[in-house]
Amino acid sequence: MSGQLLREYEAAIKFMNEGDDYLVVSHVQPDGDAISSTLATAWLLRKLGKRVTLVNEDTVPDRLRFMNGSELIQPLGGLSSDLRFSRIVAVDCADFKRIGRVSERFAEGYELLNIDHHPTNNLYGVANLVVPDAAATAQILYELIAAHGLKLDVEAAEMLYTGLLTDTGGFRYSNTDTRVMTTAAKLLEAGVNGHAIADRLLEAMSLPQLKLLRLGLNRMQFQYGDRVCSMLITPEDMADTGAAPEDLEGLVNYARNVEGVEAGVLFKGMRDGSVKASLRSGTTLDVSAIAASFGGGGHVRAAGCRLDGPEAMPLLLAAIGEALESL
Ligand SMILES: [Mn+2]
Image (cartoon, rainbow, N blue to C red; front, side):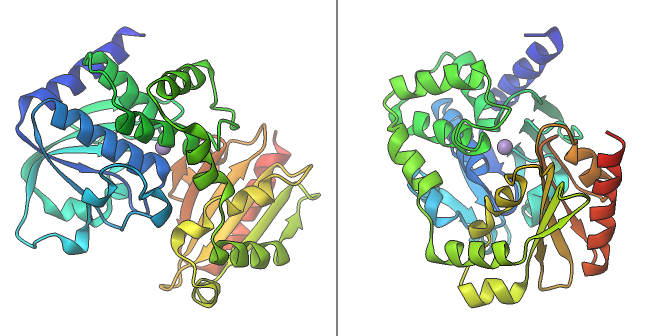
């Protein structure tokens, strides 16, 4: 471990030891790693004898509720309006905006520890533990817990395993390195039922999810010599299928997975007229750079951004096409 990173771990440990009361928050529309890291951070803080409040702008997706303590993550709407927090741990949030409206509850002069693995993280905390080569924020928390010398119970191991599993696409993405597999092995040793979690998160499909998939496949469009594949899901589609936002997870991979396709794009039309774009790349294209040029961010192989309206969709596709040209 580099000296810089060692100092970041030390600063994080210091931050977690210094206070008494903490708010733990992750990004809006939380995914597996977001919920995992929220719960694992809370687990660690409690072990250190701290009081914790867990809040997310959105509710915990149903399929992630099997994790111990997930019922303690309060949706922002349920929080009493006069509550303010001064010591905050933000996990898996590449920038401050990703925290969403929970940030309206930060007290004046608040202090924030930023724990994340996104390479585009802009170090918005008073302490920052940002490890871009960690496959998941859960991986960083595993190491933070180990640095505290704490022994994992099966519940904590399950949380961490879930973050690793989901952010590596079931141990399949290019971020699946020896560190991931070594950690996963340790978590299995701690009693995690890997098969049951994989079945729940990777195999099982909700009916709305299947209906969305059918719509998305029907609308696939190929451009730039069939190297770019895009799909569009409208707000009406969401309503018609009864889908929740998390039912869109993984849909973009169907576009990216087509042989010969280097970039898969999922456009999701929002009620306010804006369009959210999820970008995935195969082996060469850096989609985080493209997303960043449209005000978004993410990872080299998985990124996203928000467009003002549908008229910007061809512009994004053109930017991808151009980037492919120059590879
Ligand atoms: Mn993550």
